[in-house]
Image (tube, rainbow, N blue to C red):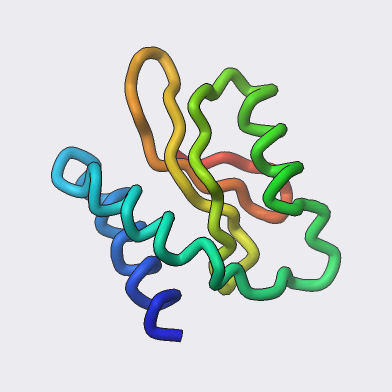
Length: 96
Protein backbone atom coordinates (compact mmCIF):
# COMPACT_ATOMS: atom_id res chain seq x y z
CA UNK A 1 0.00 0.00 0.00
CA UNK A 2 2.82 2.38 0.86
CA UNK A 3 4.46 1.69 -2.50
CA UNK A 4 1.24 2.44 -4.35
CA UNK A 5 0.76 5.71 -2.45
CA UNK A 6 4.39 6.66 -3.05
CA UNK A 7 4.06 5.89 -6.75
CA UNK A 8 0.85 7.91 -6.96
CA UNK A 9 2.56 10.90 -5.34
CA UNK A 10 5.51 10.65 -7.73
CA UNK A 11 3.27 10.34 -10.78
CA UNK A 12 1.17 13.32 -9.74
CA UNK A 13 4.36 15.33 -9.26
CA UNK A 14 5.72 14.09 -12.58
CA UNK A 15 2.56 15.09 -14.42
CA UNK A 16 2.47 18.50 -12.75
CA UNK A 17 6.23 19.19 -12.81
CA UNK A 18 7.84 16.93 -15.44
CA UNK A 19 11.16 18.80 -15.43
CA UNK A 20 11.85 18.06 -11.75
CA UNK A 21 10.36 14.56 -11.60
CA UNK A 22 12.49 12.84 -14.28
CA UNK A 23 14.45 9.96 -12.77
CA UNK A 24 12.34 9.86 -9.60
CA UNK A 25 9.24 8.80 -11.54
CA UNK A 26 11.17 6.15 -13.43
CA UNK A 27 12.68 4.76 -10.22
CA UNK A 28 9.31 4.73 -8.43
CA UNK A 29 7.69 3.04 -11.42
CA UNK A 30 10.32 0.31 -11.36
CA UNK A 31 10.10 -0.18 -7.59
CA UNK A 32 6.32 -0.41 -7.65
CA UNK A 33 6.05 -2.73 -10.63
CA UNK A 34 4.98 -5.63 -8.41
CA UNK A 35 2.12 -3.65 -6.85
CA UNK A 36 -0.14 -3.46 -9.90
CA UNK A 37 -3.49 -3.88 -8.14
CA UNK A 38 -6.61 -5.13 -9.85
CA UNK A 39 -8.43 -3.43 -12.69
CA UNK A 40 -11.93 -2.03 -12.43
CA UNK A 41 -14.59 -4.26 -13.95
CA UNK A 42 -14.47 -4.18 -17.73
CA UNK A 43 -10.88 -2.90 -18.05
CA UNK A 44 -9.70 -4.30 -21.38
CA UNK A 45 -6.03 -3.47 -20.85
CA UNK A 46 -3.29 -5.63 -19.44
CA UNK A 47 0.23 -4.23 -19.08
CA UNK A 48 1.11 -5.85 -22.40
CA UNK A 49 -1.89 -4.42 -24.29
CA UNK A 50 -1.33 -0.95 -22.79
CA UNK A 51 2.33 -1.16 -23.91
CA UNK A 52 1.30 -2.20 -27.44
CA UNK A 53 -1.28 0.61 -27.53
CA UNK A 54 1.42 3.18 -26.71
CA UNK A 55 3.72 1.77 -29.40
CA UNK A 56 0.88 1.95 -31.95
CA UNK A 57 0.47 5.63 -31.04
CA UNK A 58 4.13 6.29 -31.84
CA UNK A 59 5.73 6.05 -28.39
CA UNK A 60 9.12 4.32 -28.14
CA UNK A 61 11.25 3.06 -25.25
CA UNK A 62 8.11 2.40 -23.21
CA UNK A 63 9.05 1.55 -19.62
CA UNK A 64 7.45 -1.14 -17.51
CA UNK A 65 3.93 0.09 -16.73
CA UNK A 66 2.30 0.09 -13.29
CA UNK A 67 -1.46 0.03 -12.73
CA UNK A 68 -2.92 2.54 -10.27
CA UNK A 69 -6.08 2.16 -8.17
CA UNK A 70 -8.21 3.55 -11.02
CA UNK A 71 -6.92 1.01 -13.51
CA UNK A 72 -4.58 3.40 -15.37
CA UNK A 73 -1.30 1.97 -16.59
CA UNK A 74 1.47 4.52 -15.97
CA UNK A 75 5.14 4.73 -16.87
CA UNK A 76 7.45 6.67 -19.15
CA UNK A 77 8.10 6.63 -22.89
CA UNK A 78 9.78 8.66 -25.62
CA UNK A 79 7.75 10.72 -28.08
CA UNK A 80 9.02 13.35 -30.51
CA UNK A 81 12.53 13.15 -29.04
CA UNK A 82 11.42 13.72 -25.44
CA UNK A 83 10.89 11.35 -22.52
CA UNK A 84 7.44 11.84 -21.03
CA UNK A 85 5.31 10.30 -18.29
CA UNK A 86 2.39 8.42 -19.83
CA UNK A 87 -0.82 6.94 -18.45
CA UNK A 88 -3.30 4.76 -20.37
CA UNK A 89 -6.81 4.79 -18.89
CA UNK A 90 -9.44 2.06 -19.12
CA UNK A 91 -10.80 3.59 -22.35
CA UNK A 92 -7.40 3.75 -24.05
CA UNK A 93 -6.95 7.48 -23.63
CA UNK A 94 -3.30 8.46 -23.13
CA UNK A 95 -2.26 11.32 -20.87
CA UNK A 96 1.30 12.63 -20.97
